[in-house]
Image (cartoon, rainbow, N blue to C red; front, top):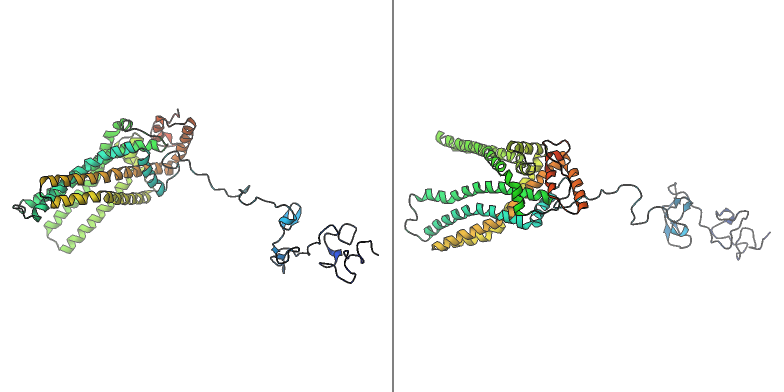
Length: 452
């Protein structure tokens, strides 16, 4: 019997009794009103019954009932039961582009108030920090480096100018250019200036490293320091730095003297040439390994002497302790940065050296030789003025990196940097942070940073 909605029970209005209703029998539809076997005329036709997603035979995607040809995925189950996409109810969970309420979150970036981030440093951090050391305080850094570079470049320039003068005399067939005394004079002019330059550079670079380390200690926190203040703070450490120069020179020169003595002994013994060459090559290889080992283990002695205000042997012992467990990494960084500094210095000084060489060889007057010496000295000074602070910065940042890795010193630096940011300036008492007593469990005695 009909209730007015259709000719046959379970058939929607407008449909014939012999025509099947859409989507099958309405009595099995899930959206039938309670107590009725027919769908309400105000509701859309129900979707077809679906198999549970993942059950055998269930399709991964099903056709949308109101948009033929479109497909939708498995139902999303929320607090209100199964949901069939945005058309059938709200979505549950974070929207696209929002942070999830739980799960992995990347760590925050390290605090960086100055030239380096206050965490254990990578190779890129060390190179970038050394360059930023020059850019952050160019007057003090480049001014001091220029003085040390000139002291080292002038002896080399004089020796090369004298050597070019000899070559010019030989090319122009001047009388007396080739005599029996010329070989000895040639050896002195060719190698004497270089040896003197190496000696001057060894002393000047060590002192420069000490002064630049003091500038670096303040630049880590974003502070600046003048040349006068840097020298005033480093002046009391000069005897210690000279002591380090003497000790390190003895460590390197005594085996070198033994190698030279071995060469003379082999020459006097008149052994087979192949045996002599093999022995000398093995001895030189052993000396290179020896020099690389001790140079790497003692490279942090100068920064420790300046920043920790320790003595000669205490600084050497401190460097030995800090490089323990990081020898190969330290050696690799020193070799790479040394190669970079050498290439940069060569590229910068090459035009001056070429012009000075041409002036010295083809010039016949004394003025040409003087011009050659000046050009060579200027090129060497400019090149070293850039490379010296870079290498000093590498040594100082290696020292900071090893302390952060060995002693968790980055926590001390971060605490001080936060306090300095709160106060809005970098106080000179921040230099006391580098004292070993600032690090929990660190050796030595010293006053911790007061923070005001």
